[in-house]
Length: 253
Image 1 (cartoon, rainbow, N blue to C red):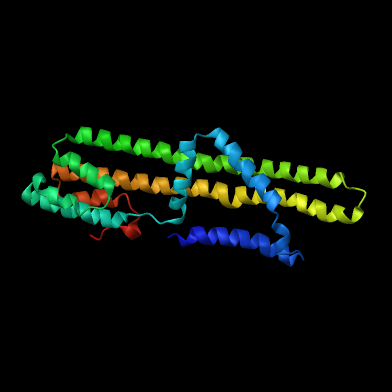
Image 2 (spheres, one colour):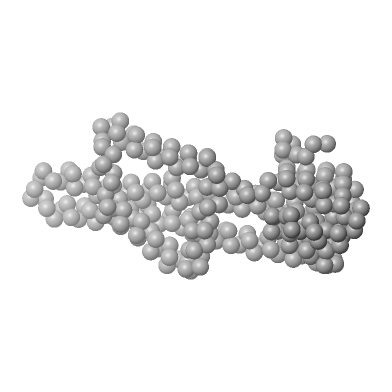
């Protein structure tokens, strides 16, 4: 679980609600069912019109990426690769078939399967890098869904405010209701701007950041697989794989 993601949303929304209360407002004033229906329903409709149903489903699945840490630790992956390399140098590539059952990273498992099947290093790299390209395109499109929602929400919030003002203007004969009516109308604007800048756009950015982390891990795995296939010295492979990590998180010498 990524605590920072949860804290980011809580702090952002808490700052708005807390600021409203400090200004003498009431948190209940920000709860308007009609405004929420207009803004979030309109945003969803506009986004659905822009993308396919499959893209929307993938985007909703990508939400878990925002709130969960990277599933596989790069340091553990490197140590696993080095262990496999040592075994391959001693017993041959065929002996690695039993190792596949112990590996929980699907990308590493697929790469090792290709290697054990006798595929050439060039072909292995081509297949695995194409998987990375396909993965990148899918995740970027999921991010684009939230980015687009972040673009639509403020505008639809303005539409909601205008609709509310229209209703207020239709009842100008009752001045006592004008102030409260205008306040309610502008809640839609708050919903639109706040949801865009505190939720949709940050989520789009977080998805891209997670994607870059995963791509870096997959590139590390490819280098490891090619190193295992070529039977390179474990020390040299460790140095090569350590180059993918920050100095503070590398495998010790």
